[in-house]
Amino acid sequence: MPPPTSIPETALDGRKRFRAAHELLERAVSERAFPGVAYGVLLDGSVVALDAVGRFTYDPTAPEVTPGTVFDLASITKVMATTAMAMFLYDRGRSRGGDRGRARSGDSGVLDLDACLGDLLPGFVIGMEPGSHKERVTLRMLLAHSSGLPGYGRLFEDHRTPEALLRAALRIPLEAAPGTRAEYSDIGFILLGKALELLSGDLTGRFFWREIATPLGLETARFCPPQDWREQIPPTEDDRVYRRRVIQGEAQDENCHALGGVAGHAGLFSNALDVLRFAACILAEGRTTAGRQLFQPDTVKLFATRQAEPSGTTRALGWDTPSEPSSSGNYFSKNSIGHLGYAGTSLWIDLERKLAAVLLTNRTWPDRASKEIQAVRPAFHDAVVSELH
Image 1: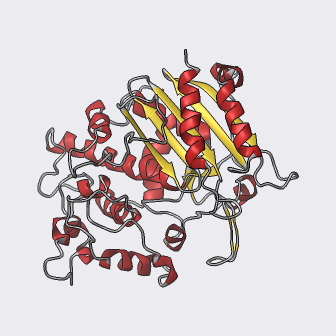
Image 2 (image 1 turned 45 degrees about the vertical axis):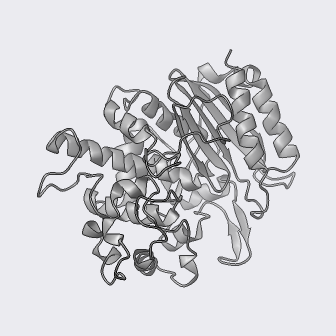
């Protein structure tokens, strides 16, 4: 069983304070946008709302979602685990090698944003086609989704082991010259995750638990939840094609599953409170509630800054920023960062307002047909900001 979650005293009147947002989610559940949802709001370092609506599935006898229910975060993994790991290693490089975060010759366990992926993972460039430009792909480009790699590939269909799938990801050709196109890429983050493992000398799951989750007190945030948690996690899909079973308590993403449930692009699980605790660290410019500096303030700012290239990109390093229109709605400031997850999850952080909002759903149950979450997200965020005054 996941550890019990106590609602902070600062959030006890959250349903009343954010009545419109709560009622909006009740309507979304009744209209079958998703079976259930847990949500939370953080303001000025305090959790001011933590609540839930609906059930695990549309079955009226299914368990009710609670504020402490653990969900498959899907691509929020990219910021909470992989980008956080990159920030941590970047800081380590700054402390050893100067203010640019560049590793000195012979350094290990540090991140140089301009390091070439092929230098870390030679399989990415060995045997590449002449003129492919794969040798120019940097870690910065992977974080900014500007590497030229395709957004997605159904690698799991032909490669069922972690080793085989990684080899297939390394061999994927670029679809654009590096740095010329912004293309949100799961493949890029799979490879980034492996590069960070090499730099850190540790596996992603262990590094995340030791360096991110434990200092922040994230009790439920983990890869590959224990077997006895699974029935307490809402199912994401009744998979009739690949695994041919209900997906519950294991990563829905098929490439992540083939990688053993731990990957740079997906695989992390958490409840809403722990996502807010992570957001609180970002809003405090890296300082934990216990006073420890998890990330340097300049590092938080660097990774939260929208990239100047390619033209038209909304991406920062790892994070997204508001586009027009945005899932963050109309009122989150331009100085906001966030990320979505395919299963129906989202995290948005307004750095100006010191505000964060998390929305966790399993909108892909029982299949992936429903797209109503696309309308619910901005409406929810608009309601939250409107009720701050």
